[in-house]
Length: 184
Image (cartoon, rainbow, N blue to C red; front, side, top):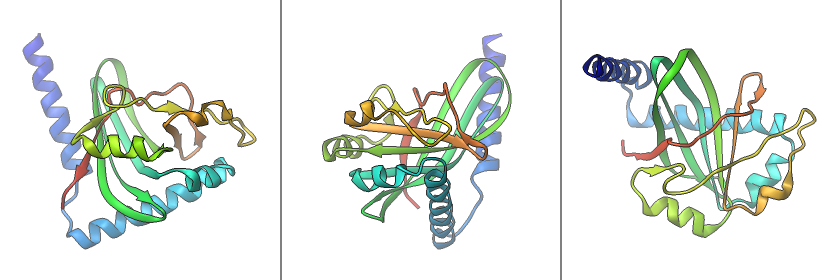
C-alpha cells in the first residue's frame, strides 16, 4: 500500500510538473511572469484598496499569480512568481507543497507575501528553499467584504494574502509551502 501511494505521488508530481512548466525562452518566461504579477497586484488592490499602501511600506513583495493545487488522496501544488522591491523585480521564485489526506479536485489561487522588515527579507534570502512555518512564519490577513482588514497583525515581519478570481479566500494556510529561487 505504501509503495502504491509513493508511486502515485511521484506520478502526480511528474504530471503537475509537465503541465505547469512549459518550455520557454528566458525572455518570454520573465515577460509572462511580469505581466501576471502586474495583473495580480491590480486585482489585489481592487479587493483590498488599502493594500497598495501596505505593499509600498513593505521591504519586498513576493507575488505568485497562479498557484495550482491538484489532488486525489495525494495532492500537490505549484506556482511561479516574482519578488519585487521598490517596484523592481529581484528574482523569480516557485512555490511547491505536497499533501496526503481527503482531497479531490483542482484549484487555482493567487498568493501575495509581504516582507515588512529588511531583516525578514534578509532571512528569506539566506535560505535556498525557504519553507513557510519552518524558516519563517507568515501571518495570513483576512479581509472583510468592504476591503477592510485587522491592522493588529501589521507589526508581524511577514504577512500574506490568498485570493482567487472571486475574491479573497479564508481559512487557508501556506504552512509547508517551500519557496525556491528559479534560475533560468
